[in-house]
Image (cartoon, rainbow, N blue to C red):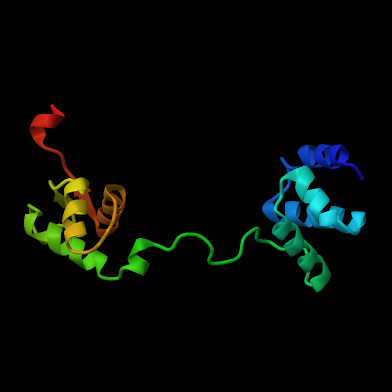
Length: 152
C-alpha cells in the first residue's frame, strides 16, 4: 500500500476516531502491510511508531477491544487540595480574621482579593494561582466582595 492511500484513509477517518480507535486502526493497517508496516503507517499518518506498537500489543493481547472509557480511570490532574492537604486550613486561617459580619451567619465574605491571598499563600509555601484561590474560597462558602467605591 502506498503512502498516499494511507494518508487519504487517515485524513478521512481521523475526525471520527478517538485516541484508542485511531491507535487500533493504525495497528491493523501496519499489520496488513506486514514487514515495515509500522514505519510506513507512521510516515503516512504522523502517528508515532511507539503508538502503533502499543496498538499492536493491544490487538494481540486478547483483551476485549470495546470499552466504555476512552482514557484510563483516574487520569487527569489531581485536585490541589488532594496534593496539598493543609492548603484549605491555611487559606481559611488567612481569611477568617478579616472576614466581617456575624460569625454565626451562613453568609461569609471577604474583601481580600484572590490575588492577594495567592501571594500570601505563596509565602506559606502553597504555590497556587489566583483562580485556584477563588475556587477554593467558593468551596469554603466565601463570597468575594469588592470595594463599594469601585462598584459604583
